[in-house]
Length: 379
Image (cartoon, rainbow, N blue to C red):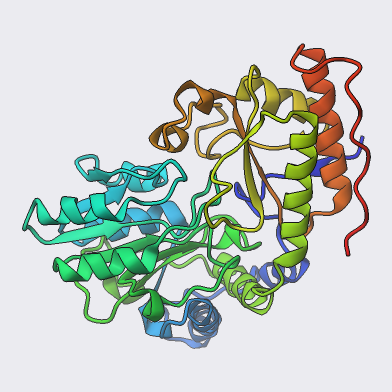
C-alpha cells in the first residue's frame, strides 16, 4: 500500500545530501575537544556546521550553542537566564514546562499573541523578565508578531526568546531584524537528523549552563558534541537557506487540500485561516468526529497526520493551543496536516479520499455525497 506522509511539523524527512554528510562524518574518531590532529579535524567539522547554522538566522557563528534539540535549547534559554518568565499561552510544552511558574499571556481567536495583554503582563511586575514567543505555532502554523513582542520587551527592560523550531527554514529569520536575544532551532525540522539543535544568543548575554561537567560550547553546554548529527544539521541549514523562497508549491498543495475539504464538508473549521500562516500547515476541525479517530483511521489508510504536537509519547491529547484560542471542546476534533519538500498532489488526493470515506463511514457525511475528484496538476 502506498502511503502519504503529511506530518512534516513533527519531523521532516531527511534530505539525501544530509544523510550522506552524516554517514561521511560517522567514521570521524576525534573528540572535538582534543588538541591532536584527530580532535582538530572533528572540531573543524563542528565549526563548519556552526557557520552554516548561524548564516540561516543572520547571526555570527560564535553565538551558536549546539544542543541535543529544540527542547534542550528552550530549557537552557529559560532556565539559564535567571529571570522571571513571560510566555504566550500557545507555546510548545518544552517552553511551558521549562518555567512552570511563568506568566501566561493570552492569544486572540486567530491564534495571535495579544500584544496588549503582553504589555500589561510586563507592566505588572518590575522584575527583570524574559519573554518567550514562538515564531510560528506548530499546531496551527500561525506566524506570531515576534518583532512587535521584542519592542515591547525592550521597552520594559526585558529580553526576548523565540522558539523558531517550526518557522525557521520556512520563512525568513534574522535575529537582528526581529530583535531576538535568544533563538531556538532544531535540525530535524529542517530535514536534518534528530538529536541536534541550537540556541543562538546575543553577545554578552549571561546564561547559566544547565548541563555541567565540561567546557564545551563556550562553557554553556557541557558534553561532547554529537559531531555527525551537527554535520547533518549544517547541511540541512544550508539547504533550507537556499530554498527559503520556494514555498509557493507547498502553499498550493495546502490551499487545494483546504478547498477540497471544505467542498466535502462546508462547515469544517480551518484554524487560524484569517491570520498569517506558514505555507505548509493546516489545522482542520471536523464537527462530530474526534481527532483520535481521524488520526488512527487515516493511518490505517496509509495517511500520516497528527492531532496536536507530536511530543506526547504517542498519545492523542487535547490541544492546549486550541483551547487557548477559545475552541473549547472543538479542540478535540482537530487534526493537523503539514506538508514539506517531498509532498506531491498525490498525497493530497490520498488524504481527501481517505478522509471522505471516513466521514461517510462514521455518518458525518451522506453516503451519496458527491465525490471530490483529483485536483489538477501543479501550475
